[in-house]
Length: 209
Image 1: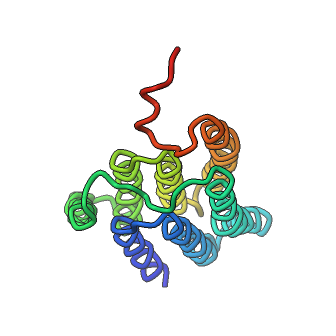
Image 2: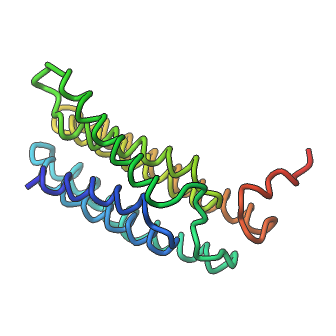
């Protein structure tokens, strides 16, 4: 069941690469939060109940509900247009993300350590590179924040792979996730939005020291 959820998560990365509307990005991030909740519920079956409850609560509350809701609020408050405005056509983005995923599968074939789950390795690294790709190829600053949140999801998946052996690593990752999300969304996006109405990275050229 975990592998099925991981495959569905990977499909969401492909969908993210061709999404054109910011609302679609937000829905995909929320869906990824639900998927991560399911993976954590199934995978972290050996940690104590308190740690498990903390992980599940953070995942469903922050990743699936609060962060998508706040992103939607930021869009409305700053009058951000709904188009993601990618630099590259959607078809090219789909080919690149597909190539990244295939490359991660090829790279995972070189792993001989039986303790490392190859599917986690592939999905986590694919998610990290997809987040970086979104940051590089999208114009709006809010999409850069979304790309960072995708990277956070990749780190979270990687921590789940060793969660039963090192539950503290999962907790530390969650605390970092909460701090970084609140800082980026609450401070960075809102402050930039008060200055730059369109929240487009091209306008950063106009900022003076």
